[in-house]
Image (cartoon, rainbow, N blue to C red; front, side, top):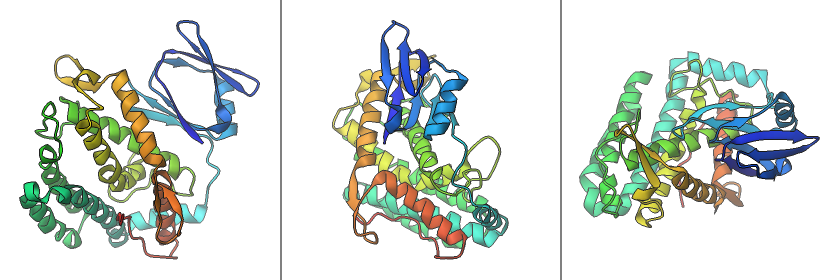
Length: 328
């Protein structure tokens, strides 16, 4: 099953069970919907209800991105993986502070493990930061509420970002601080774009399980966002996205020409840059490792779904949840 990314403006037309992409220049292309799992729309496209009905039949998620290339929303088929007992238990673990803290701490421990894994390769240059993160890690177990835990995680991530210039070997890219809304330089643009892709990847895998993506533990459950996707993405951002960004910059696959500036202070990947990033992201997600428990090759994408299954087992009392810590 594939992820399909649309960058050119046009409209989508359905004829029976075939989907046609009709672009502004008049060119026409068929979309192989039978082996499409997710459709990512970065362009202005026209749709109709017939198309959405087919997407529902074929279980295809559609993720929409705004002008700046950042995630703005999704159309998801009617949930077929539903389990009332899991929903009840998922909510119960939010209402009980101790149970919620345990799960949230697992997400943070995993994120810290992967951050340290990234920077320990450059120990001689960043040893003071490694020591600082190691000390901050000890405070995670003592957090008595979610706000305190989030504060510790924020301090750790701030320290971690200070290591980026030691890891990035391309003199054209320098990192000063994390700026999200909006990103003002190329590295921040890469992080924000990567986080959007990571969020939708987690959401897509979560829809294949019984988890409710709006009931979360580290991030506050709220309206208009799938906050559990944000929780689980914390595990994979340093493991997958940060390493991908380092590789793209250090191998000069992404260069200054792949960015554009809007109003002089908003930095974005241009279309060419996005295509390069997405192509390498898809390669990384399909890369496999030998899973210790399953004793078979497992893709990075499937590791995300395994985290969802592990969390479900914890919620229903089968097995304590231990978030992923890369061993390879």
